[in-house]
Each structure stands twice: as C-alpha cells, then as structure tokens.
Image (cartoon, rainbow, N blue to C red; front, side, top):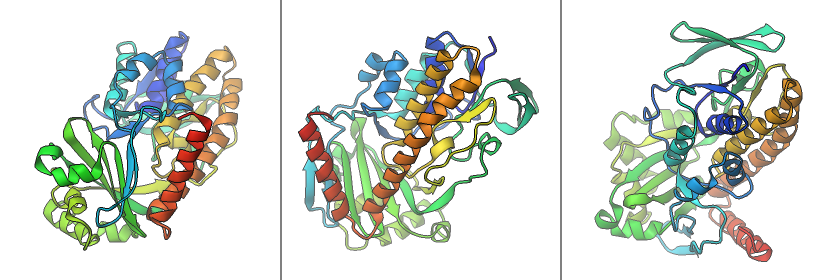
Amino acid sequence: MTPVTIVGAGLGGLTLARVLHVHGIPTIVYEAEGSAGARAQGGMLDIHERDGQLALKAAGLFDPFRALIHAGGEASRVLDPQGAVLMDQPDDGTGGRPEVLRGELRRLLLDSLPAGTVQWGRKLARVAALGDGRHELTFTDGASVTTGLLVGADGAWSKVRPLLSDATPAYAGATFIDTYLFDADARYPATAQAVGGGGMFAMTPGRGIFAHREPGGTLHAYIGLRRPAEWIAAIDFGDAAAAKARIAAEFDGWAPALTTLITHSDTPPVPRLLHTLPIGHRWDRVPGVTLLGDAAHLAPPAGEGANLAMLDGAELAQAIAAHPGDIEAALAAYESVMFPRGAAAAAGAHRILDLCLGDSAPFGLLDFFAGAFARRDASGEG
C-alpha cells in the first residue's frame, strides 16, 4: 500500500498519521524542522470534548492524554487595568476543556507512531501536479518524491495550499506578543496572584494583557495590540529592553502587577502578527490532495485551532479508512464536513478577537463568558 504523504508534523498532521496507523494504513510525514525539539511548542491548550478529545479517542490516546492534564488550568478571570477582579470562574473540574501543554501533547502523538514515520529536516520547496491525482514534492535539499495522496498539514503559510486555492493569509489587524515569567509565585507574587490558577484577561479597546499559568510556576503572557503591521515592524525586537519599554508604554497607568508581565519578561518579547484566511475558505475538489488545520481554515487564536486541526486529522483518516480504494470519495466526504465546521469556527474566532480588543472590551467578553457559563450550567455539560 502506498503511504499517505503528510506535509507538516503539527498536531493535525500527527493526529492524521496516528489514526491512519490505528487503521493499518501507512503514512510518511515530512517536517521542515530538524528534530522534535528544534523549536518551543507554545503554551497551554484547552482540549475540548466536542473535537480535540474526540480526535484523541479515535487515536486511542485518550487515557494517556488525561495523564497530561494541568489540574486547575480551566480557571478564568477578567481584570480591569488596575487589577480589580471583574469575573472569577474557578476550575471545578466540570468544564470539559482540560488544559495541557502543546509540547507534551505533540510528544504523545509522536511517540505513538512507528519509528521513521516523521522525516525531519525535509523542508518543502515546491510541489507540482503530475496528473491523475499524483503529485511531486521537491525539498530544499534537492530530493523529490511522488505521491498519490498528499495532505497539506503545513500551517498558515502552506506550500500545498496553492494546488487547491489562490487564497493567502491576510493580517487581521492585531498582534500578540509572547512573554514569560518563570518561578513567578516566588519572584512576582502579586502578578502570580493576579493571573490566578488558569487564564487571565485584562483589556480595554485596542489593547490587552492575557496570561495563562503553566506548570512549574510559569506565567505565559500574550500582549495584545490592535495596531497596523507597520507599527509593530517599527519596534526593534532585537533589542529586548527597548521592545519591552515600547510595549509597556501602551499600558501606561495599568497596575504594576499586570505590566510586570511585559517589563520583567524572562524571555525577549516575540511578536506574533495574527493572519487569517477568508471566513468560509473552500476549494473545488482536486484529485489526490487536501488540507487540514490552519492550512485550510486559518483564523485568530480563540482556543479552537489545535482542536480543529486534530479533529480534521482524525476525520480525514476515518474517511480514508472507510473508502478503501476510492481516495476521491474519501476526500469529498471529509471536505463536505470540514468546510462548514471551519467556517463556523473562523467566524466565532473573529468574534472573540473583537470582544478582546474591539470597542466593547472588556464588557463584551464578560457578557460572552456569562452566557457561556449559563449555557454550560443549564445543559449540565462542559
């Protein structure tokens, strides 16, 4: 059996590979990074019952996933710029969105695959259609391979997407800047107390400080600014002290317990300009190739991206297994469900970004949380 060819060893591509392996279907994953530890894997992820957890169950990894859960991480609080608590929702264990470190979840998936499934250091240079559903992949080292089933799981700037669509990511008008405080309970107790046990949101229109507690007393912050890309580009992030000062100036008058997340970051601030694909991005069926995750439906961060990528991977694998010998039927079945799901999630993610940094902040987000908690309590579900 010819292996399914996956480009990208993120959570979506690895989930696809794992669920295919469960069904006895061989895969090969080409990843540009040189090794599993070549890059930090980001912070906490909340894994939802309706998508990410379903994918892990399909992968046969739900029980080991539960061992990775960060207890207490589902707590949420909203503060005003002076640090006053506007909303405080503790983690009572019933939320249905347990938190895990992205890197640990990725390691779980990697360890579940046969040795050699992931080919590291294979950066895709170009891909060409050969006809009859076959494609040729050429890597930056000059090597090339051909495949009868190609899946682009290669993220926002996918090299596979142009086979299917002319769409390219556009700047969403906002940037999140990563900072970290280590051993915060001992070194910055006021800040640690302000963040609490899980996620913290402090925002006014156009700016926000968002943070999450990670294991070991680490506070990971995302400094949100609704600014033109040119404004961000004018900051010299090569000079960490100057960059911290410039970002902190946007929060003049805010409580020191909050601005410490900027001014005292133990790591240089890293800007992450938010880009998105058009809401409802889709394509006509092209033989032998499809996309999943951010490559298919890139949207602002709202807790959905990783979950959707994993569910995409699991459902694509299940569709392939359910249509032996008929790849086109499998891809059509997968895309018919993935397209509307991705569109709905993208619309919701844009709404969350607006609630966090738009004109209604913070009160729109407070109303959103109140409605979400009320619906959860009424249904008895997470």
